[in-house]
Length: 128
Image 1 (cartoon, rainbow, N blue to C red):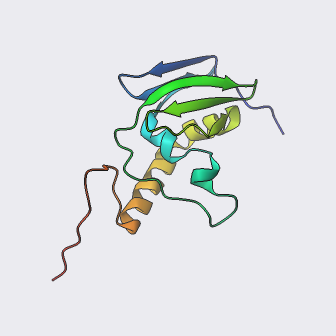
Image 2: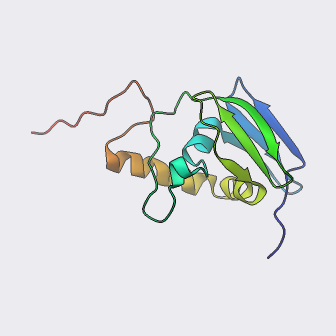
Image 3: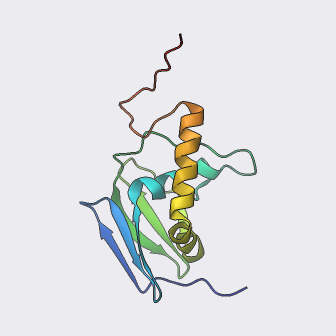
């Protein structure tokens, strides 16, 4: 197994609500909402297969702070109070590389569940 690539630069943009990661071979900007809904925490992922939770209503979430967790990860404190996810270097790289695929899957799952990104919006289905 090859070692995870650690970003050479990590930049928190509170105004843009995003985290920018600069690798030797690429740069990526991960929105706070994307990071929040794909948190590696047990609260989101559960403790085993089939226990995942669909996080919704996080379109306005921001990032309060980012700290290192040892030499292998970041811990992100979101402004909704969520702080239990430890984002390993490997997982952050995966989130960068598969951002479009994961985001489209998230939007599809929201739609299937009748949920939305906006906490103030309630999807209504009109029948007839």
